[in-house]
Length: 135
Image 1 (tube, rainbow, N blue to C red):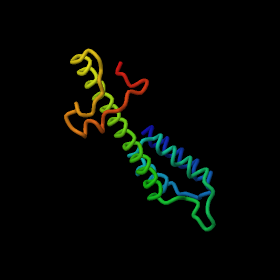
Image 2: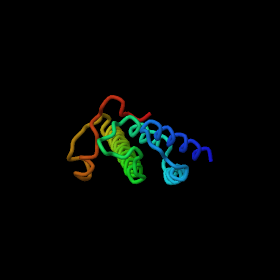
Image 3: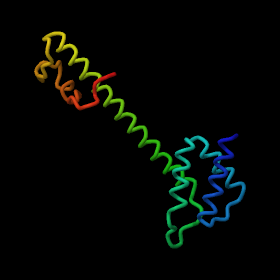
Image 4: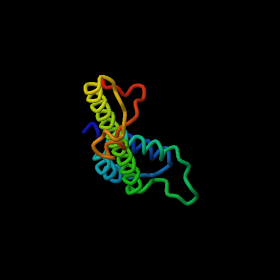
């Protein structure tokens, strides 16, 4: 309920910013449709639309599909960033696992691509940058 009230308030502010005359039914429809998305994402879209200059002959109130397209792009971008971060963390963990094995095996870490089990492991293993050591 609180999220819906917050969405309604954001939508009303957007209507004021864009000079749109919107019915209560339209507010309800938009709020219901947008409630499936994260509130910070909706706020980001509303803020972008409120600050964007309207093109000549552009309607003051954006279509629901425009909201949803923008929200989907934000969500997809976030998911891609999270996927990349997971891959990066997995690469760091693999690097330090192999480093620990080499230290244990030889007493000193030796980086030699031939020692890896596959070329895929070589490609995924990051170089030792500052701050990559697990805590």
